[in-house]
Length: 363
Image 1 (cartoon, rainbow, N blue to C red):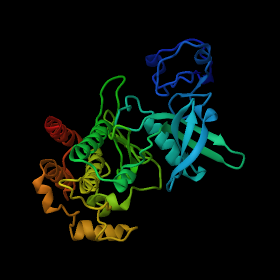
Image 2: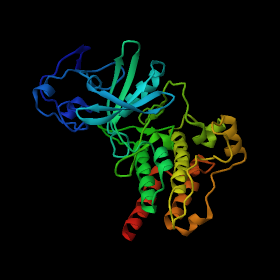
Image 3: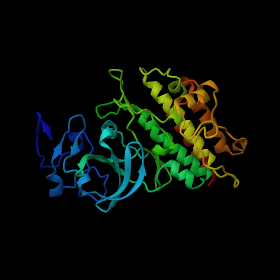
Image 4: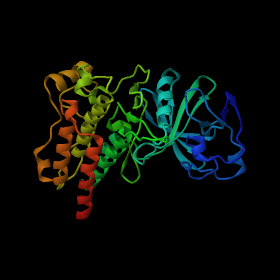
C-alpha cells in the first residue's frame, strides 16, 4: 500500500474498510468476491496506488486473461470476451489516444458504493504493452446477451419482459443519480451517454448500465461538478433539447440528470416497440429513424427536436395494454422539452415497480 509516498507490501489480511476500495481475490473462483480468502497467494499480493486512481491490485488480473474473441467495436476501441480463472470476462481495449476515456471510466467504476446489480460489474483496469503499443484495458463482467440494442434487434419481448427490462434500467440509473451521504458514501453521478448500445442484458433478462467514460460526479459539500476533460460528447441522436440548443446550465448538477432522463425515455420507446401484444409487434428502430439520417448531425437533431418539437411516435394500439399505456406516459414525461418537468429516475423506478408487481400478480 502507499504509505508516506512509499509502496509497501501487505502480507496480512486487510479488511475492506481499511482498504477503502474493492479488492478482487485472484484465488477465488468467484471473480466478484471481495473478501480475503486467507491463502498465501492472497496474503502476499502487493497493493499499489497509481496517481489519480483508487487502490488496484498490482499483480494485475489482465496478465492472466486470455483473449478469446472480439465481440464489439466502438469509437473507443474494441471489446473482447476473455477467459480468467475459467470464467468469461469482458475486456474493453482502448486505443492509447483515448487514454482520458479509459482513465475516467476506470475512475468512475471504482467510486465507493457504486456496485449495483443494474450497473456493469467492474473487475480491473490495467495498461498492457503488446510490443507495438500500449493497450489500455478495462475488465468487467461478461454478459453474453450483448447490448440492449442487439437484444431488441434479435427478437421481441413479452409484456412482463418489457417491464423487467425498463425497471432494471431505471433502478441502475436511480442508483447512479443518487447521493449516499456518509464516510462510505457515494457522490451523485450522471451518465451523459445513455442509449441502448450502452446498456447490457444479463442472463436473467434484466439490464446493466455500462460505458461510464463520459460520466460526471457531483460534490455536494463543495457544490462542484467533476466534468471529465474529454473531447468526446454524447450520442447526438439521444441528446436532450437543451444540449442540442446549447442552453443547458452546466453549473447545476440537476441539468445532467435531467438530460439522462430524456435519453431514458427514448430507450423505453425502443423497448416498447418490440413488445408483443396479441401477436402484434413492430420492427426494431432507433429513435427518430423516420425523420433524421442514419448518422445525424447536431443540426439535424436540433431542427427535429427543438424547432419542430417532434418526438418518437406512440402507436394507438399501446392504449389497449396497461403496461404499454403506463410506459408510454412515462416516456412522454421523460422527453418533455423542459428538463425541470421531466420525471426523476427514482420516480420512474417506483412507477415501474408497481407495474411489475401487477404483471407478476397476473402471471
